[in-house]
Image (cartoon, rainbow, N blue to C red; front, side, top):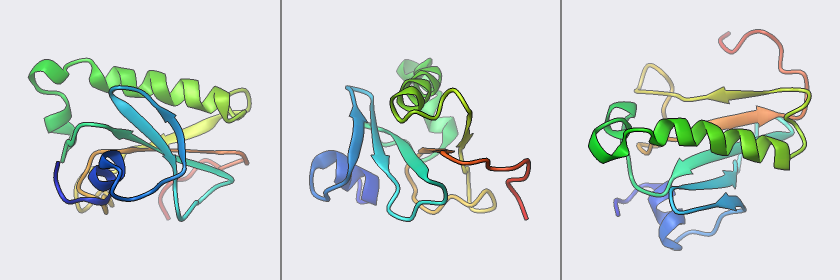
Length: 116
């Protein structure tokens, strides 16, 4: 395990509001939500970047992340009206935590723009 906040959540060092968990992914509520539903889909294994996530034995894991997102959107009651998935990659992409994760946002009309 590394020292980022998501590794600490997966290891049990930091508590989080867990919505879903399996062997590969944890889904938690964002502590600074940007929508009525704002969840973070976190790989249980540490991946710093999208490139790391798609190498070797991890091939196919990205697709599973989207399956988990869809499942959790249904569980949260937002799948029918729609939701947004955001993956911030790199400094210019707005990534703040060096552990790959996907934001799932919904519960209101989000509008067409994601960049100001």
